[in-house]
Image 1 (cartoon, helix red, strand yellow):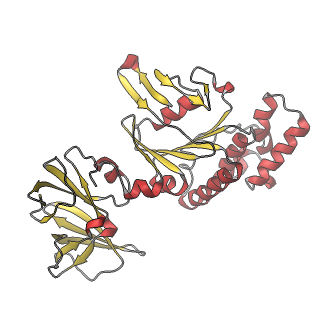
Image 2: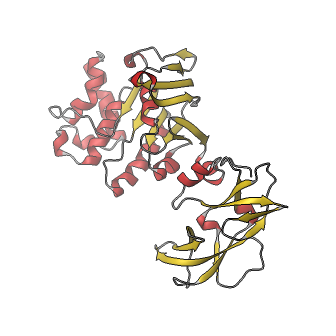
Image 3: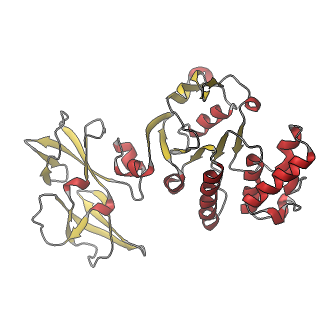
Length: 349
């Protein structure tokens, strides 16, 4: 995609603006962002269901943004299964082959292979209404895969499934993509899906791409405070302050050393919840922030301690703790775990 924009309502509504993105052959790329950020519109432009208002889309060296969907050799799977209720599972899967005039013998062979790949070979004679939601989604995927597309597009395909089945299908989709080596673009608002499945993630907001990175890099080096707030559960804690004489005076009243130089006087210090330690005694380290425990939430694999720091609720994830609500505590951290953002919310270091 080269400087691709999409406008609606005569240009009054901007769905996408200046999208620049290159997807590698065989890559699993995820568009991640909140509802209404433009990720589905971007996917529909790749598919040919929407025409860009500006910019160009290429498959390899071929420009395709003015080509109809049928000429792009893409397969798309939607949130709803879009299966034909009057057809069996077999007939649904083979339908795209049938309309392309593929001979019956080849159709049967490809349907059998695809059904086995998706573990629905024993459901081929069933009607969609007779099978589970997970099997219907597998049927929808099989109908897309059987075409042997060059690009696989998935728009929130797991959102209608229950939590256990979503987890199973996440693993299944990643396995399929690895086995088939099909270039895949996947749209979701679910961070867990994006982080666990994507080779790279394109984070979107308000119609633009804010950062493209591998999952670990995206989590460990969010380039803006918006991304730091969006990625992670709970998200990164941000402490606003002002740079002064080699130190940062936080709005909380604490002072910590200035980790890096920046021309911006207004800054924010970012720290992930798992990178902070809760202590009740004043620490020797300069890297600490004082607060009061608001609530303590035991969540099995960790304890979430919610700390009031000058009216702001700070989340800290610790393995175990004996602190109680109302306790004065110190949140300590290592300088290498702190992120410094300038007044525009851009990562300094």
